[in-house]
Amino acid sequence: MQRRKFIKQTGLLSLITVSGLLTGCSLPFEYGPHDIKVKSEFRNLTQRNLDKLMAIDNNKSSFRFAFISDNHTFYDDFEDQIKDINSRDDIDFVIHGGDITLSSLHKEFTWFNEIIGKLDVPFLTVIGNHDHLSNGKAIYEKSFGPTNYTFTFRGVKFVMFDNVIWENGNKNPDFDWFKENLKNDDNYNHVFPVSHIPPWADQFINQNESIFNEMMLEKNIELSIHGHTHKYYFDKRYDEIDYLVVGDTPDRNYAIITVDEDNYSVEKIIF
View 1: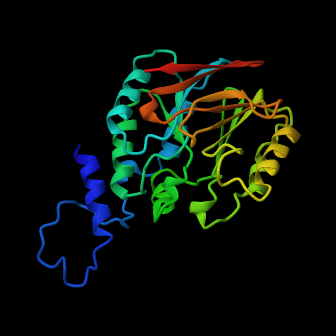
View 2 (view 1 turned 90 degrees about the vertical axis):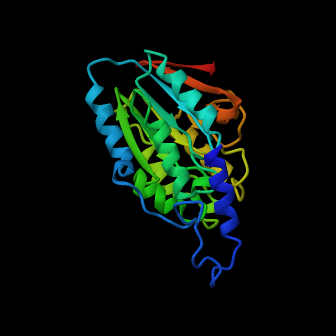
């Protein structure tokens, strides 16, 4: 596939000493590995999609969204996944759980946006650890916006949290921001945090796992949503809170979450 060929070629380029070696060469790619230019059509996508989502908000209290994650460079499977979601008429929006790229190359972000832009419904994203590589965070912020943000839809608050550690300079996530935004104050029917890495996975060392879950318990969170592990999981990992993790795109599954004022349900979809 041409996309994968590009990634291999660009990776090889990073190993070459450029002094004089590339002069006069006809290069087989358009961009360097550290390019952070983003086409205008692919900028500010979080706010653009939130505007679309708010335009369909109405007096209904129930809704249904799809959760997908970890497409990396599996573009054929990703195309199939988007087609499968579009074949349904019961989805209000889609959330992507991160690792939209493998190596955070500019061209990978472009390919992702070209494919997910075929969705018939709005989409929102969180950043994954692979999206933090190299200049990935800068490209992500240009393409989408802040890596921590919230939005509300039909009485439900979504807390979109950047919890990457290793690829983010080994810095702890902004737990102060996270804790503050998990508050409900009886203003919402549910509060759903969404982040790439589940707390039992790698990176959550030095008590970060317990910190994360203490916040969940303190704020009475019912459901926490993740990707990263490339394996589907839906259960009460710590006895009280439902944790949902979807597989990567080549596993050919995703989740549909149905929400009303008092309850929610999760369905695993195979495509």
